[in-house]
Image (cartoon, rainbow, N blue to C red; front, side, top):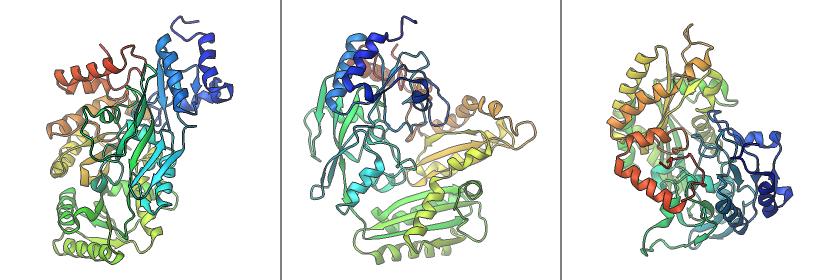
Length: 481
């Protein structure tokens, strides 16, 4: 046996904490937990633990601290940068929060909900809806992703424009530290200036500083009016001008403004069951507009109609459709949310989760397309995303040319090269190489290259202060020198 791997008696000690019925040891059972969602990372682990309480998590971390055993927190395993995947070394134990999935409290008067870290996002949404409230985080994976992971990656989703990302949607946390100590920061206060904001250190840390076991989340009144429109446009430049009009007209009622290319619509209608082209004729680009109002339904209707009228008059909108039912609204959003999955049947896909200043999106799109197609002739660019907050998923499907068609490994082997091209343009525009997916393993080394020495030094100091033994999700975000 490799001396660096946990010995059987140590694995038994971890097992005793949660009970034999709440561990996975067999290779076949562990296999789905060892692979990142896109298959970029494959790890090894001798054991997966399923604690049922914060006290059990604390006991696991205490033993891990005493024995120097690396622990990898995992919730829904839906991450896209390898942050939840154990290393290939084989010594990392996975700590799954799937049993800690309870909604602990819902307070519609204070507009807060308290949930355990393993609560599924869709269940949190339903719990809020049951008291006529809204929890606005919405993701394509909301039926399987969990609150602890959403917080650990500072998830964004489709409603950031109006409500912010998870950092803005959280009031307090409960966290188990690498030492096994429990920090109870489950405060429900909107105003609390008492020292350093420890909460914000753990949000977005991707499980490298501690295990988020519970959270106080913000709720909002459910909108009285809601309208979704889908418009065909000529260019990202026209989309930007239409967004400006939407912002001026709708203000805080503008909850979503999504940009999509024709290629993305073709992929979804070709490969996603039930998706239909919303407009009778094709257009180079499209925008999906979501408007929610608090006073009455008629206000949302007037807003969307006025916006489209202004768009037509200005020559920005070529054609449009307004959803006339909840089912149609869901169908339009389903098409948008399925765009990434629709690329899979088209072969390999090189992904980018980037953000640039909103006003620079058209120039970024043009420059990136020119650079990528120059480096890889025939590359099929499917760039889409949240134009309203500057987050673009700049995805590239492999060419159909004879020298590349069918050779997925050769295409994916150029992942780092193409990333470098796109990220250089993003950084030159004052943007970020990670908008909402996190750093994980995928962008860890690149982060160290693009951040200033003082920023990286501060991150190392924080990591060392919280996790001096280096056992908390090692190898993710920052690698200790």
